[in-house]
Each structure stands twice: as C-alpha cells, then as structure tokens.
Image (cartoon, rainbow, N blue to C red; front, side, top):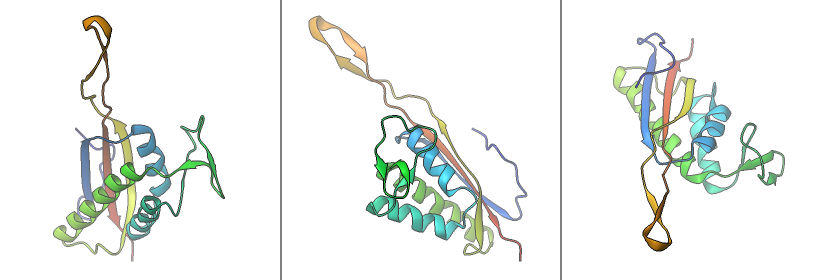
Amino acid sequence: MGYTNNPDPETTAKAYGKELQISPKESVEICREIRNQDVDDAIEYLEKVIKGEKAVPYRKHKKQIAHNKGVGSGGYPKKAAEHIKNLLEECKANAENKGLDSDNMNIITVAAHEGSPIKGFQPRAMGRSSPHNTTTTNVEVILQEKEA
C-alpha cells in the first residue's frame, strides 16, 4: 500500500485506514468535501454530518439521491464520516508525535480507494448460493503544517 503523494516528511504527517468496512462511494464524496480544509474545521464538519445537522453534497454518485436544503443531492453518511473523522484525529496525533503544531495543519491529501472485498454468500433454494460480498475502502490522509 502506498500513498498517492510524497510530500516533505519534515512538515507533514500521514495516516492510512486500510480495508475499512465503509462505502467507497460515500467516502469519495466526504473526501472531496474536506480536501484542502483546516484539520479542525474538517473534524467539526464531520461531527455535524454524524449528528445529521449538515449534509454532504454528492457530486459524482448522485443518482436516485434525495435533495437536501441548500445542498442539492446529498446525504448524511454517518458510518463513513465516523471512520474518516477517527483517521483525521489519528493523523493529527501523528503530527503531535513528530513535534509539529497540530492546531496549525491543513489537509493536503485525502483520498478514498476501493479495497479488497470480504467474500460472503447468500443461501438460495435447493442448496445453491449467490455471492454476497462486503465492500471495503482504503482511505489515506496527509496533513501539512501551514506556512507562518
């Protein structure tokens, strides 16, 4: 597993969530929304999404999605938001551990990629079965210290 970006290790902190059992489509929409934000603002935004106060606008995966006031097509992906919020907090802790100013960090890279599926099956009639796999998602986060 590699990162999509190789920034300066002196001013950045990284975290990687591997094979999280969350929706890849919802994760992509959340990542697009919090990219290039201040890390504290992004965590606050995700807390509002978890509480159902603010919707995540869907730009790419928006077919048959209800509209929300002021957002258009969107939703409240609680489970994905919780996992990504935890990943941001881990990355912030990594920055503190490296000696960086964790309150003065920007999200420069946040990306979600489809992970390997967890195999499963659905029993059917007459001893047969159909595949019923669970999707997983890999999420990467890179924070960079803001310029003074």
